[in-house]
Image 1 (cartoon, rainbow, N blue to C red):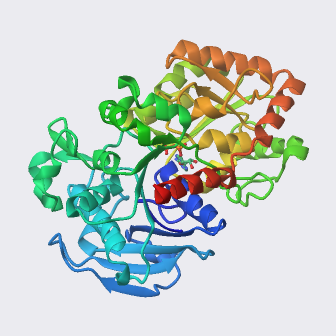
Image 2: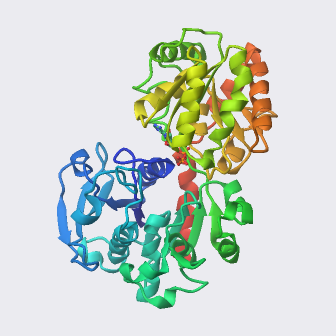
Image 3: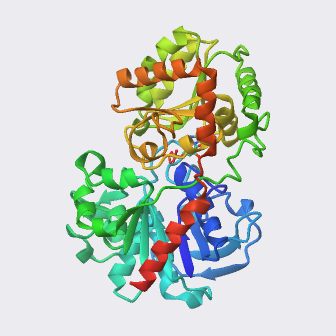
Length: 477
Ligand code: ADP
């Protein structure tokens, strides 16, 4: 079975969030099960330098009048996983991140950028001779690839089944209708049952309505997005297509995220040597200029700083714990007001709070290994990967009961591995933090929870069986 897996970010090449982790790991796990998966992503600045030399190069012309689109092929570093890159200087060789310029603003031509990328994905399904390989399944991810489903619908040609995975419904890739002609799609797609979206048009909606199957990244989120609260204006659309909507929980790449082999952390440990985790805590405290204190409970956060993550609740909710001597260490970037709020907390508690604004992959590993509890008070969370990493590191997550957090973190019962609260309020979070402090003081009980956390298997290996079944069912349909 041949699968073309399209993503706008892939770890370790470029990453803004969980999508990159998934795109870097699921295809590799599927290939280990003999599924012939190839990746495709845009050739952003600096990407080719991170990859082995290009093996082939095809010019696909200039359909968007922005310069030629060139399709390059190579493979992931230290892996046999093939990857195609869509090269176009004016669209992708820019200063900044994949979606935002260096000032943090959306690129003004994000519609054309990702339409062009998606157009190439759609072309490959039709013209396999371009690359001597034609996929049986086209697997799209998020709005940046949704245009591909629209091109296939517009061309009205036979094409392989399309799967769209929603990693975050909030980012719907919507643009002004007046700009629609820029993406070279016919106007008959602009209707309520097509791409039209509240007076705009949405690339994600195209990915939903024109796909043969839709998946999202946890069973709970798959249910939540059918409601107005979580549906972000697409709940009606999703309800109409719920027969083809599935929740498939993300996995973890344990080659990257295991405290027994993690090259970034101070001291390796596993289920049988949890005591050694302490050396990572001391090293983290040292690294941050905090007093080395084995007894102080250390709370942490690794996150994009956005409204979604509920991080505005933490400064007030954590204060009673800080008053009792706890520590708090954060790594994140995003919302400027939130950044300021956290820096102010650091100023008030300089010996207990350490805030690092920025993005730092290696430090995120050291943080996960060194803290005792990871705070994730998300207002919504499609799957969430940081709680899965925390579990593996014997770091107990404190989460709001939503999406993938609700599917993976439990406070009660034999699977208890963390702390769970219901409402996105300071009070609820404060009370969960209090419960965690009480539990932390019961060393034996804490160890049992850590063992439970560390023994849970969220490997991709488990998820691949579900994926293969889904692909197979589409081919048999
Ligand atoms: P989302 O995709 O909504 O950002 P996830 O929990 O699914 O949330 O994935 C976030 C990923 O990004 C994790 O791998 C996490 O470790 C990483 N991450 C988030 N913020 C940072 C940061 N500031 N520095 C390093 N890694 C980060």
